[in-house]
Length: 269
Image (cartoon, rainbow, N blue to C red; front, side):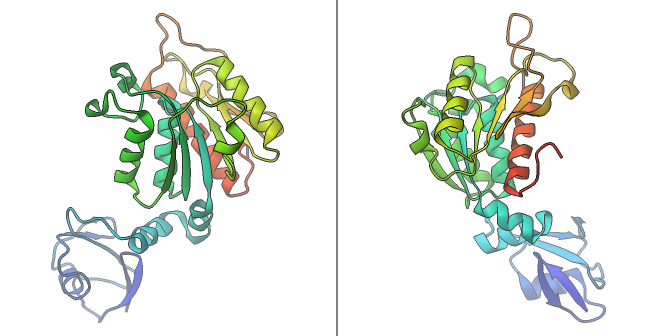
């Protein structure tokens, strides 16, 4: 009968047990997942069962990780993700969370741009750790992404984006994610990409401060190749700061719009 071991098809005999297959396929595995659950060694296998065999502390190689991602995404989706190149402008609450989501999806390359360092106040909503305070956001985020998916290519730019350098920084990307805090920086990037990089969509954000209803954050198309996430109203002010839940909702709206664009699907459905 046929089962799947780490997403590869394997032929086993009738009455085979989990332990027998572990010893045969990956004897150093010390974590065994059978159909999504921890498995007792003597569990009997049935046609079509799935086993994941893991050695604690050992990273899967590229082929094995891709096999596992393909199983979650389906082959067609994963192949398009792997070919994707995405620019992320600003690595704060939005940009760092977008980058993490896309790395988990297996996007092929991320172009990460920011000139700031990690501050203690960033930790309430951004994808960094206490020991990274004081480090460049680009380098700290690249380190964190490598712990999630070391096979995602990362290009780092520690500088301020301007109308002059944006087209070269993001040359060849499929989508640009705008993740700035300041309104003037947002407007500059959007205008530059739409004017100087024809055909490249921008996924921007506006209106995500505070603790208002999460379902107020939506994705809108406001122009050709321009999508804006948020409620377009709320802004940071005393008593209504930038907080992890609502910022995270917006960031994942942005990441999902990117995924849909890579798959050739309208972000709005």
